[in-house]
Amino acid sequence: MNNLLSRIRNYGPGQDGVVTPIAVCALVGAVGFNLWHLFPETTGGGIPVNDRLFHLPLIDSAVSAITNGQDITDPWQGTMSLGFPVFHYYQHLPHVSLALVHVLSFKVFTTIDLLRWTTYLGLSLFPISIYWSLRRFSFDPLTCAMGALVASLIGNDFQRWGGFGYANYSFSGFGLYTQLWGMVLLPIALALGYQTIRTGQGYFWATLFLSVTLMSHLLYGYMAFVTLGFLAFIPNPDIKSSVQVIFAHWKRLLLVFGLVVCVTLYFMVPFLLDQEHFGKTVGNTEQITINSFGFWVVLEALVKGDLFDFGRFPSISILIFGGIGTCIFYRRESQYRVPILIFVIWLLMFFGRTTWGSAIDLLPFSQDIHMHRFIGGVHLGGIFLAASALAVPLRWAVTRGNKWYIAAVLLLTLLLLGPVYVERRTYLSDNAAAKQENQAELKAEQADMDNVIKTLQALPPGRVYAGLST
Image (cartoon, rainbow, N blue to C red; front, side):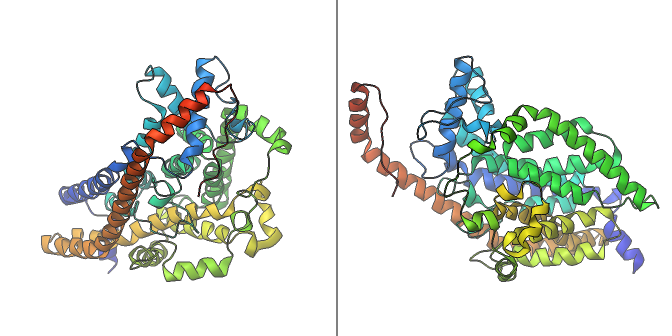
């Protein structure tokens, strides 16, 4: 029995001829599915009624700052309300990056096209981020491939939960552009940071990606450091003195934190000093947004499958519970402690102030955090857990060295994930249809809008109120 378990965990080099094709096919299949079905996101002519209408003017303000020789990290955004220095308080690396590409390409690529294409590529290539990060966490190629296979399959009620699902970023969804950058970067930043605190090597890359994650999405960067703080308590199985090892982990983590602070000091100092000028809106004072849902609502949703499989058979939810069992079974191997730790930490955090009350104030800056977005950590941990569960029977089949066992396990995997991919394809088809309808309606009204714009251009300079969307 012990020999079989050892073989399942550590298949030999002679089996690479089987493992590599499976891993490559899974990764190419996951990315290819996204590239094909998300392509309508790149087409023009539609106007999304979501946060993209917020991000596009921010990109334009960065372009204006570059053109006029102003500070690209803190331009004045004059078209929103009576004007506001948004970058003074808001993650801006995505906007600045697109503005630089726009200007350096001599404006060949329009800002709206850059926004569409980076959304498309970010969503499509997310499975690569999961695969690469799992490899850095020392998982075998099959587990990494299974992670890529489930990375884009989160299906939940985005109007309530948010998180990693397509609906948070798509044309007919919320258009959370900076969160998309955070989602893609978070696994990579965690893997690099974890490797550095355990080995004392790779400070440059850990600092770079943690800084980029933070300036792409402040909350996801914050979550990265909180997660690393807990991962630092995972001892090194090769060293007997756990206390000394954990102490060394924390010293390295504090050094990385100090380096990231130095890199982002240009933003952090004004951000903290000028907090009194940051206004309160419905979006950042709504109780669910700030305090999250509480343990009963969250656990009920998890058991029902609503956190990962809303409105469909709970394939991913089942795999997550299987992954918990897998990680407990292989707990002696340090990499298997990572998925369950990430999942449990952020599930508990996702309960929010509604459950923990004033105890949650132990978290730095907790008064201003949108705790409902902690679901991103739950989803990341869930993806890692599902990958761990899916890989177990596949590794077993590979160690048997029988092609029929491998074929049977692959067929079972297809039967389990096939309906999920069908449901995701249906969502993306509906998203494409919604965009086509939007394009048709916009085309029908284009002449009227052109006349309105022509009239406005003939008037003296001033502000225009177009009314609220309905």
